[in-house]
Length: 271
Image 1 (cartoon, rainbow, N blue to C red):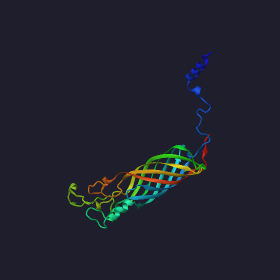
Image 2: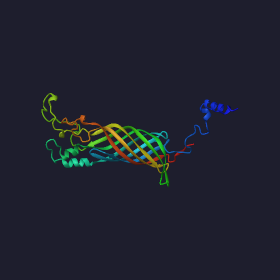
Image 3: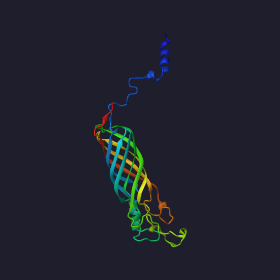
Image 4: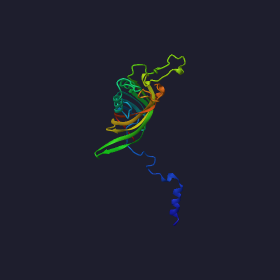
């Protein structure tokens, strides 16, 4: 008789996971949860501004459009149109330059004409939203939130104020020599910037939503657009000429803030 409790415990352990089943087994972690993303469109008018730009800051407005396949996965596109303003570094450089070219120093005009800006940029890709929940604000307001990461194809349309041929590299000496190898390129200031046009690349970033209701929320993120570029449009590799070899694969970091609208306007509630 004294052995019966021990035998019962051993039999339960040997019977496998089924013996430990409870009424809550295989049930959802949260019932009656608002599915704020699943099977909904997200349309977000957004403002973006560049961070740590070399010579030109970009201020842009545009639109993000996504379709949420599930509560955690979505596909989308984004496009922005903006303007460029000099960075503090660019203002210092221009102030230090002479009005006319001297020795190997470009003039103020040459520096301003060669540097490029980003009037258009955007991309397309996937967004993964693995983290979501609710947060309290001073124990009075409770907001739903989510945190997401995204990435995919990115692009930019770059432009400069150079009045000549952007892709030209001008010969400076022995230009009539029938052997191209003997022609000399000694003054990069008269070459085209080689930094204007359509620039394909990649984009990736992360951000969060703060939901004011199941229809509208605040979208805040940081995104990096990476593509080949020569922001100064001048001789980067010091070979005394400006060519496509002066371009390199660069990061263009932006911060964005937008107001996200979710359609249909009413979110489904889980079982």
